[in-house]
Image (cartoon, rainbow, N blue to C red; front, side):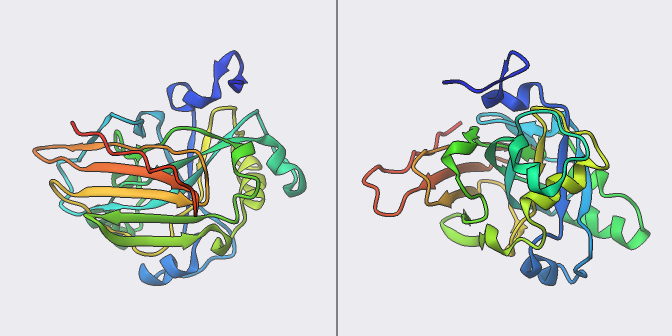
Length: 249
């Protein structure tokens, strides 16, 4: 049965969701690779809804960057409105999940950090948030027992367990909801494990989550005289079902 929110299908949250709330520095190994400090509270930043790049949509590489990086993240899609919810009740507001990429202009972000400026130019540009198909929360009984992975041209770049998050998903939802009222269809990107790195013309990205039966695909392409093909799949160890093949544009 299709999950509906306010008469709209939650499975197409990117068409009508208002907020993309991102959490930075939520995996200690990524914090170390970025030579940053582990903080006592989550680092938050926002992307506009125009940052969504659903399957088949192009990624528009900003003309002002020469160092575009991939950051693989688990996205938590809100199933109903929540405001100042306690941590113990936070998961009741989750509608499902999606695999996401937080595309980052790393050279621009580095300059912003040096000058003490916000990261908007580096992370909030149009189509900077490719998202996979929606996965209902019933398909993921415990989102803290997942292994995310990402390959570029067949080489493993990122692999991390969500159990390694510094701040848990219930904590993040509770924390964010005390600052920003979360609406149904909003998504929270929960941070990236180590291994972030650059992507360039004609690179092929393949990413996924181990241990799930439902396959999803994520197929953005980079525009600006370049193309990146990304294929994200969910694999079940021991399953005879082959992974979904990547499409070409």
